[in-house]
Amino acid sequence: MDMKLRVNKNKTFIILSWVIPLAIILFILYMNFLPFGFSETRTIQVGSETDTTPGVFYLEQSSALGARQEFQGQTFRAIDGVVNVIYQPDQILRNVMVSAELKGEGVYFIEQPDITNVSWDYDFMNELDKFQVQVSPPTSNSTAPLSLYDQFIQKKEINIGDISETPFAIKITYNSTMKNNLLSGDIGLIQDSKQIVLNYTSGLNGTDSSVSQKKIVYNLPDFFIGNEQKIVIGYDGSEVYLFVNETLVGEEMANETSFENIQSSDGTVKVYGNDVSPSILNGSIQKDENGCLIFDGNTRLVLPNSSNDFENGPFSVYVEWTPTLANNSQELIGHYNWEIWQNEKTVHFMIGRTYNQGPMYSIHYLVNPNFFNRPHSLLAVYNPSSQKSEAGYIELYVDGNFAGRKEFGDETIWIDYGNRDLSLGKSMHGIAIDYMGSICNARLAYAPLISENDYAGFSVNLNVGEVIKMPIFGHGNLEKVSINVVKN
Image (cartoon, rainbow, N blue to C red; front, side, top):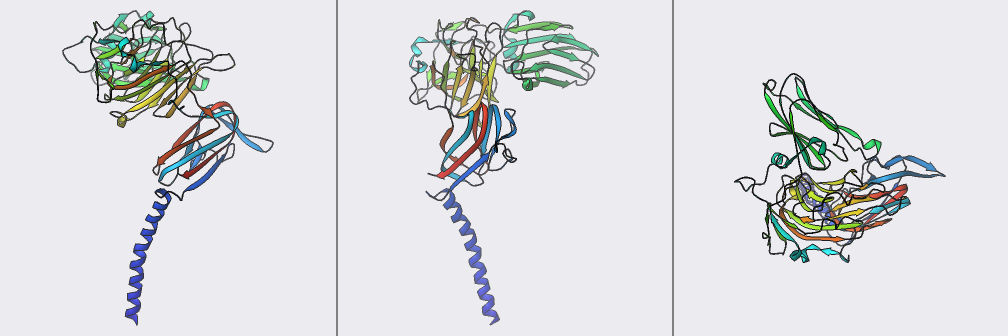
């Protein structure tokens, strides 16, 4: 009897050891891979105590998100800029339809607009016969791209008082002592017995909360003091770089800065700016099997006599490209007063200067090493204000993802600034080197392509831990956000 009982228990254990894992697997399949089975609705009551508590569905903390408020029993928050709504499910979701709605006043979802039916004013890939192929003259016997350091100093030498545009580089050669005051004004540069300190102010044209003091510190190595040293400060429109004896020792973001008031003290100072135009014209450019233009890091396309075009907004620019070089700054398309370019960390859209000697504005989209050698698309929008009651702005989407919006009141691009032509693969205004990779599409429409709604809907696949960010923008009040997720 005991033997039979023991056998039956063993059988039961064996069966359960298979049934339980099988049930889990079937549940996962049921929830994620069968054409039915998953549906959920979630709501954020904005202004509640838990509206920003991380979980499956919540508001991301942001400086644009106002304090919790209540009026006649209704909670809400003021929105002044961009706030992300986060959806982070704890399941693997395959082929689900996500729909979201919001309730509020003066706020809306931002999505990349559908460009399939856009009437483009310029499709540059169909107008290549109008472009001039320019090949940069060799700077050395090497065919390798210039180092970041050489990009800055192999420019035309200018006076320090003439710094009014990007990029520029300041080179200081001096004999190091226990205390050297090298630069003052908009850039401070001091070397003492222990370190070199570079400081400047970023965010001057934003809100008070966006203004910040930036600093790059370099600790001196042994035997530094008492010898001749060379320091180079480079600025490319979005970042400040510090080189000591040709070695990059630090870099910091620099949005909306002013570097026009700079005085030198110790040492010999040279300032470099303004690209030297290429001397070899009418080169050739190849296409790949998909008809995409191949840029070899030494070639660009320039549209002659276009220096006075493509500056009056609004306009939107669409680009499809595959970058192959992950280092340095490379421009995809640009004019003298606006540029779309990338480096190993970010994709940039920048305009400026605005009005007469006004500031520059830019948006950055962060990338990682996996970004390269893969096809991508972007949409950049410049939409100046048509009336003083509304703020003009620039906007950037990369691979359909909203990168950000930067408002600038009633300012506009200063159309009389610079006289360079539109170009693909390299701009005559900027630190960006000749691009390496391919460009498959480059289009421009004289319209602000935007999508602002109180509803957002799309299909998506998500793994555990992956998130959906749905940006909400506006200057108003947000009361409620709801999301519904259903398997297609």
